[in-house]
Every structure is written in structure tokens, then in C-alpha cells.
Length: 302
Image (cartoon, rainbow, N blue to C red):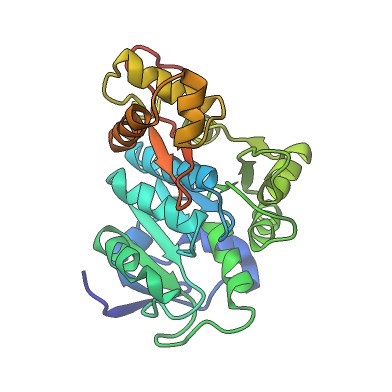
């Protein structure tokens, strides 16, 4: 990985053709760090922009990471903004999937923001790139993030919103995507959650409902193009029962133990095993949620 900054001027070879759709609002120059070829080789039809709330729920972060992982493993490039929450989860998923991810930054391409994302930034540069229209060294100022959203919208053939309150910056990106003639998709969320208001309203207004990576692949590549397998390792019956209890709404160790009539000690061990196997995710408060992983033999369409 190198922090050296490179630049591509509008009209030069390698400048992403998709940005020309922005017309006079297209960046005069793109500055970047990381793999320059990841930008010069950009293909609109193979790129997905994933955005969402910084204050994402464990459900939203899990969905974003799974989307990033499966889409990258299927050969698509994942674009996001490296913010906390949904953006960071989508990037991490793409990296786990062994694919390419592009981070569009509000400050200079060599400026890690937020500062706590330094490790993620380094991982992105190792196989993808961080890009910006801001010159090197510039810290993001007021209005920088809404402004950079147009670049994110232009780079993706579809913009997928995982979680968004209303109003939010993510919804600005969707409006820009629609103005460019791009597709917009949204992941549904609980009707009682403020962070799902924006996505649920997008679906009501006609956005594509996104249940998983397969829906995105169907929209971009055609129905029948299969995503990578989403199967995890085999589960013993007792572990399957615990995973099922979590899926039905028992979120804590005590709640699962009560639902199954099991001891808290045995339940805690089972929950830890399921988390290690990738079937469950735990948030900072110790509440569990199901991942998109499914046991072998239960393959279904996402």
C-alpha cells in the first residue's frame, strides 16, 4: 500500500466515463490513493454504490457487510464513503469477499476521515482506492459530504440504501442517482425504527426492494446470475434451535434460554459458537441477530 497521491484530469485517459453523466458538475480532477487501475478500469455496469446511516443498527451493519461481501465475491466493485456505520460495513464486506472497493472521501484522498478508520483506509488502499475531488491534505469542511455524494451516485449503476433516517445524506445520494438515470434500491427495515424510515419510504415511492445480493445481481446482470454460496458450516440440532430462537426475536442470552427452556450457561456457549461460525452477530450491548448465512441443505433465493 502506498499513500502517494495521483490525479486524473477530466478528459484524460482513465477518467471514469460514468462521471461524464454529471455534465458540468463532473470533477475537474480526481485525486486518489491506492490502486489507480481500480479507477481507470471502472465499469459502470459492474459497480454498486452502498450507502446508509452512520448510526446504523446491528441489523443494518450486518446486511451492509453481507451485501458487500457477496457482491464483491461475484465480481462487482463496491463504492461507499468510508463513514462509520453502513459505509464502513460495506467496505469491510467487500474486502472479506476478496473484491475491489472504492472509498469516495469528503476531504483529500490522503486524509483519513474519520480518524478512527485508519485501519480500514489502509485495507481499502491495498486492493482498491480512496478518491476525492478535494486536493491532497484538505480536511473535509461544511458541505463536503453532500457534494461528494454526486460522485458516489454517478459511479454506481445502482445505489443501494441499507438504513437511513429521514432526512439524511443517503437520501441526497439517491436523488442524485435518480437524476442521473441510475437505479435505486433499498433494504426494508422495522417499521418502528427511525433509522428505517428513509429506506421504507423509498420502497413505497418505487425503489427496488433489496433483500440481499441476489436482488442486486438480478437487476444489474439479469435474472439467473447466481451469487456466491451463502452456506455456512453444518449445524448440530441444538445450535440450529438456538439460531432459530434468535431469528424469531430472542435477542439476549437470557431470552434465548427462556424461549428454549435451556440453562443460561449452555445457551451462552451456543451463542458464542454460532457467532464464531458466522451465523450470529452481537452488538455492543450483547444483543444477537442472525446473519444471512444459512446451513447447508437450506439454500434458498436471497
